[in-house]
Image (cartoon, rainbow, N blue to C red; front, side, top):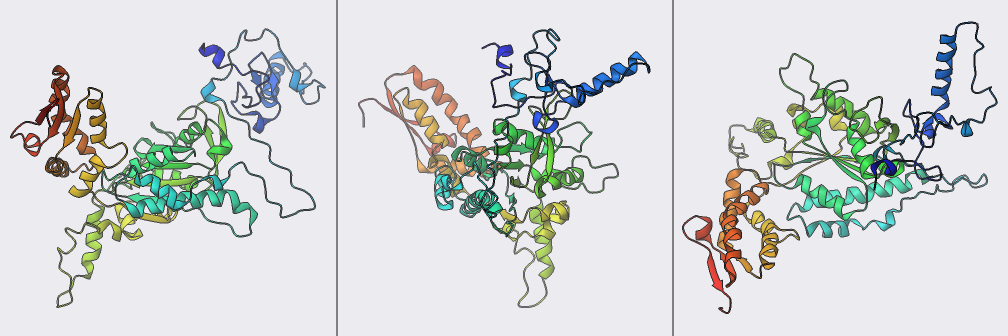
Amino acid sequence: MDDKSDSVIKDDNNEYEKICYMCRQPESSVGKMIKMTENMFICPNCMQRTFDLMNNSAGNNSMPFNLSNSGLNIENLLMPGFMGDFAGIPKSQRVKKAKPKAEKSENTENKEEVKNLDFRKLPPPHKIKEQLDEYVIGQDRAKKIISVAVYNHYKRVTKDAAGDIEIGKSNMLMIGPTGCGKTYLVQILAKLLNVPLAIADATSLTEAGYIGDDVESVLSKLLKAADNDVERAETGIVFIDEIDKIAKKKNVTNRDVSGESVQQGLLKLLEGADVEVPVGAMSKNAMVPMTTINTRNILFICGGAFPDLDEIIKKRLAKNTLIGFNSDLKDKFDNDPELLFKVTNEDLRDFGLIPEFIGRLPVVYALKGLDAEMLVKIMKEPKNAILKQYQKLLALDEVDLQFDDDALLVIAEKALEKKTGARGLRSIIEEFMLDIMYEIPKDSSIGRVFITKEYIEGKGGPRIVLRGQN
């Protein structure tokens, strides 16, 4: 389909709002649009400013023109031939019209407002966790917290207006070492639930006016995920990854435009406010339509690795170290695998998060670091496990691929040495699978291949079984 014809806004298309060509504001904000050509509209304010400019250029003796008192039908005002065949607003920058709200009866004061969102269609928390268990190994506490938060979030959105008690928003802060599954957990959640979810990276955010993305860009991604439907985006979920990278910089004399300033910019989003958001772009400019999103019902999940946070926790816990029989040893917490579970708001402040930012993230929890046993399960148990992917690839060549348990343990130990969590598994497996994927298609007599411990350690080769042999 031609891009030009695809971007045309038809008169009979009531799904999207008309956008002013000059100020880029939607019809719901500025009133009835003036139709200039088939696909070009201008709001009354911009048209009036144009006439005022024309009056000023013509001289003081000319009679001023007032559009509102002119008696013209603004909706049908048309200037044929102006701008020729104008293509209109691109499809990615169209804003969907808000659906009309049901009118309340005058006799029923407490009648519940009709909403399009029905949380009963959302699976309960235990069902959400069961679905997450199929893709994510371990992290049971994190999966429970996310499942409950998502379920309660949509109960709050649909039933908050009916009662006198206002339910607060439970934004979350997810802490865990790199490669433990923070981002993957949210990605799977987006796949399982039919809700708009946007994943943003905090490393690209800067204070408004500097090179980089404004904090409003995270809402632009959410609006895009909701197909430019503002009402649907206002009940979505935003995951901000690498949140630890915007920690307040230490011993910095110049302005911290990508650290503390970004935290301050995110405060209004986390708390709940009306925010002007560019449609179809990551930054505001004169040629991008703007729309307003209320963040009161948007659930924010922040995640980060927080390197060296464990040292801050250890330093705080070491203050309790005394001399005597009941004292704790200084090295007691050096190898504690659950040290991050002891994190407090004081530790996060010492790391570089401002108190106002921490206060808007009331639910703080940590994910466990992966050990060898969990890495082995990650390789073979999830639905999209990497071993299952290679087995499927070789099954297309009618070859059965098998892995010895000792070989998987060696792979897990190599991944632990890299200290990149589950991310290190693929690079290791890709390395020793390269020759197998290259050589197997050469010989059609090969029926089964066993990956052995000796092959992973470089002391031998894989065990090959020909077709017809056991």
